[in-house]
Image (tube, rainbow, N blue to C red; front, side):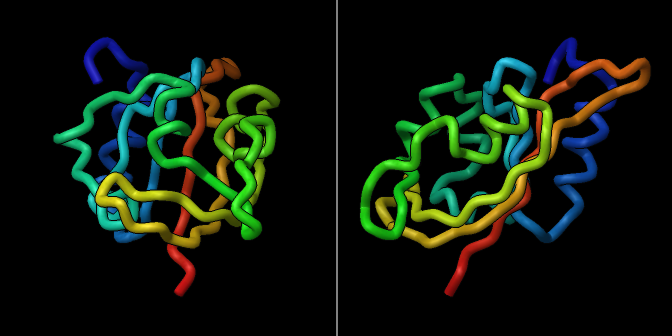
Length: 129
């Protein structure tokens, strides 16, 4: 995360130490990081994917509703948190990069730094079994 705000660097450090799946996106919606707990659900290690550009990571994980219909981007929690700067929740299915479909739910919230600087968003999610 070169030349990133210190708050994003610290958020990544915190996420690395927690045993809950966490995603971090920048203000543009680019996926900057996901922790080891998220790797098991997403089906690949972050070291293998690196940063994933906005729009591409939704295509990779293909979030769908229970009926199999795609979850519109406007209803995805990280989109809401980055575009509307408010928390959001959703439950959906994703296709992991390992080919396994998983039912997940999660929340996303905007990340603000000192001086009300918008830094991106954090998503916390879990697999439903």
